[in-house]
Length: 362
Length: 264
Image (cartoon, rainbow over all chains, first blue to last red; front, side):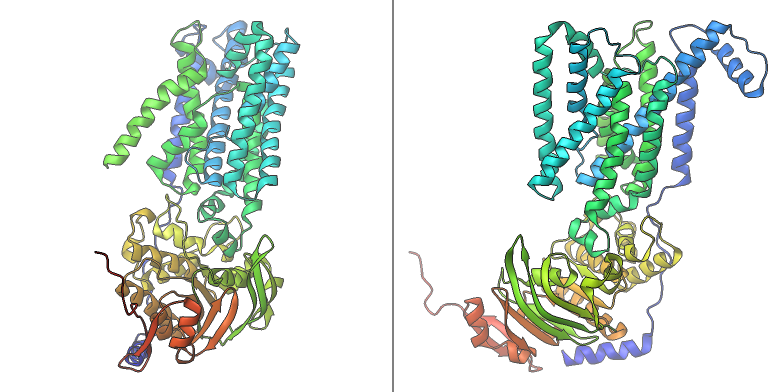
């Protein structure tokens, strides 16, 4: 042993300060990914605006968009312009916002709970909104589920109420995230049971509740967009800012604390931001499944495993995914519409399975 | 670089005391080995020094009370590698080691060129440069332990608290890792506190040993003073013989019972 130390001392004297290697590459967001994401989003948004139940003709829509941008003369009639600008475009924008909100919230939930199966509905947001909307539908039969107002308020409050209840129960049981997930399961089961009970009391409400649960992006103008925009923007800013901390949470609470971070505070901040975005998305679009679960995984499999990449790209690709899905929902059986939740699962699941396969063999 | 003074430190979980009234001093650039049987409170002691568990008593680093420090400042003076680190699956070795720079970056900010330079140097020092872009789950056991050590080193702290850094390593890899820590201690004057279950290695690398049993200090001193057959047999409930290596250092050897039971 003494020889070893003597030997070390000699090399110490001769080598001096250890030489520096080249700067290593960090797993950061690459411009090519962002450009790709933006290009896909813009292309799908544009394409989606050109296609719809009312046949406006894609050349004329393009000309109309050009006219609006340059201040030229509109080729559309007043009614056609209203269809485009008051129905179709807000719907496309809404789809992109809802998709982005759900996907980025899903990414945040997966990071906070260190669980690949986590999605934005994990803590009872879906069950809470479901119960709340069902109660409104059964007690106020004339309420219009497709428009702003009471139903949206009910869904928003119900979603936040579900998450809040889970949080309270989880906190009283223990500080770890596994307890919170279990509390979410319990709250979800309880609220869903309550919803089923209320629904059975008023069987005639069944179809309307069911349609709401399958998700719906039809709008009556820009109101819905204004509902989702503030919370989505807030969630986007908070979650992008916290993405590095989500990576850090992956090392566990003790190590995060040892590195000077308070994991409980980070989790609370992230969950509040993600839950607000989820609740507002649910309030305008119902329960659209699959986006929040799968889009973060698609990003993870293709672009990298750091939340610094996953969070911002989930925003872009979540938006694109839902715009694309809604386009299919509107056109496949036009003029009838498919429920968007069916489209997201029907198209997303096979694509996801394919990606899992190629990733395994690579 | 940093002297550590622990006085009257007691710690535990949910009101249950696991470590009671531990006092110890480590001079700057020294190496304290914490030994003791399973469940004696070794890991809890390290966590109490870090302030990660409820505790009473005082920990001073260079005369400053650690409990009075803000979280970030504490993370700038004490580096920590746990016994069973959780490795985030999606990260590369570089990403992971960069997390060690957290106390030096803005809370939400991105790392500067300086941070990347520190990581480059640490990776080079621990011979991980070739693996910089590898994902954590693809590393072998020895590489993984080195990556965890690299993350703690990237914190650039005067004190390193390593909980069983050789867990799961064979004797060669364990030696390699402890040599690295020792070299660092000599080159940069880092003060080292490790828990170690291999008593012979603990005696070879640590300057002083602290023997814990049921949460209390039962022996403290140089390896020659602590690693005696009587002391170890009493506290480990084991049959032990202490031999001498050619250089005179103690070798702790287990002794098999005189009459092993044989099955027909």
